[in-house]
Amino acid sequence: MTTTSVGMRCPECSREKTKVVRMGGGVDPILTYVLIGLNVLMFFGSKGGNFFAGGGTQIYFDLSLYPIAVSEEPWRLLSSGFLHVNFLHLGLNMYMLYVLGPALENTLGRARFLALYLASVVGGSFLVVLFSSFPDSVADLLRASPTGGTVGASGAIFGLFGGAYMYYRARGETAMTAQLGPTILINLAFTFFIPFISIGGHLGGLIVGGAIGSFLYLASRRRASQILQVGAVVVLAVVLFAAAIIVAPGVA
Image (cartoon, rainbow, N blue to C red):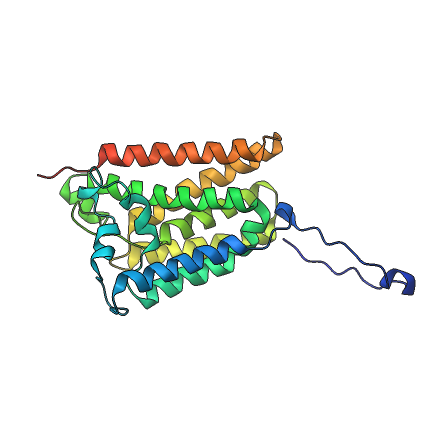
């Protein structure tokens, strides 16, 4: 992640081609841009022209996360992570994905990056559903409600931040963690002090992403295959998906 200067080179050396090897297999951040494009397409496809306020077309409501509907319509746990309330909501999340995504995708490789992203979406949705099943007094403090709608890629973004922080921390890359740490803390402050932001979505993504980041580093150190690493993350996502369905509040 740290770029360094190669200094002065002799005339013969300067004519040689130098092969640049980037971490994570040197992949281009195509997947990051695909995810940004998908979020943008879902935004325009679900808002029906209502780009500056909440709500949208029937698609928007059919794909949003309503905890009370999860037991019968579990796809909401994942689809809600690709919807946004308004332009500002979309812009902030896509900017953060654009800033962090390429470097992390390059470090982890596309398969592990995608697994981390999607598992973080499910992790955020799980905690939203879990919080909504608490007694009303507690759920209200956590800004959770069985009938309240939640949308946004924030769970995935927090998952990427958590995963990146734990992965780079384990590798001893202090320059990266010195940047990521304050960013995470600032965004957590916004989460708790700005009304209408989903506490469960942000915390769930961060916790799950951080756990996955630590796991991926340890698995890599033990030379586990990438297929095994991705498979383990997928299993975690499936477990959280099933757990969310189990704890989802029913219709009174």
